[in-house]
Amino acid sequence: MTLPISGGEVATQYSSLWNVIKRVQADCLNLQASTAGGAACRLSLFLQLAQDSLSLTKLYDQFASNQTVANGVIAYAQQQSPGVTFGGSDFTATRNAAGSILTAIASQYPHDATGKLLDRTWSSTDGEVWATATAAQAPTIMTAISAFLATLS
Image (cartoon, rainbow, N blue to C red; front, side, top):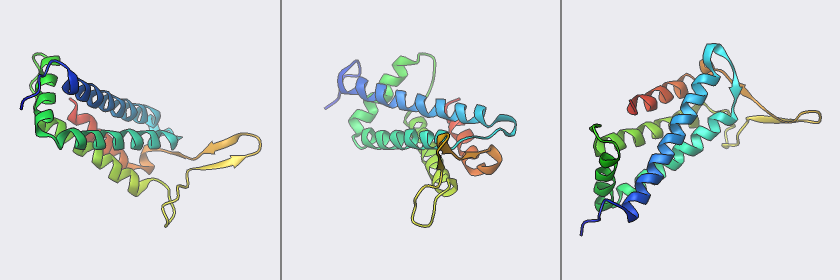
């Protein structure tokens, strides 16, 4: 059975995948801008990137598990971007780059030996106070961000 590529499940899967890719891209660009010139940014920005990267990998794995849907999504994506040449390997590369972001964050994000996050404190005057990090303090994460963005160019 082949799925029509003009709508239905294929269009929904494509839209969902495209939207999460754009969220990860926006998170990456936000982190790069927030840490430019040695500036420190709240660790919550790293967590947002992790959550969106996790969403991307899960969504990709779900649609890729059905080859008919995957082929339809690729064909549909090509229709949405006339003049742009890409295929399934481009989606796979994007998924793998998001997986690398997850791996980098898992290794560098502050946590204790049990996996509890060590990213904020509480102040009676300021409330929740997020720890911060610079790009220099997260080199593996920043490299993974650059690699993800390179898959989109």
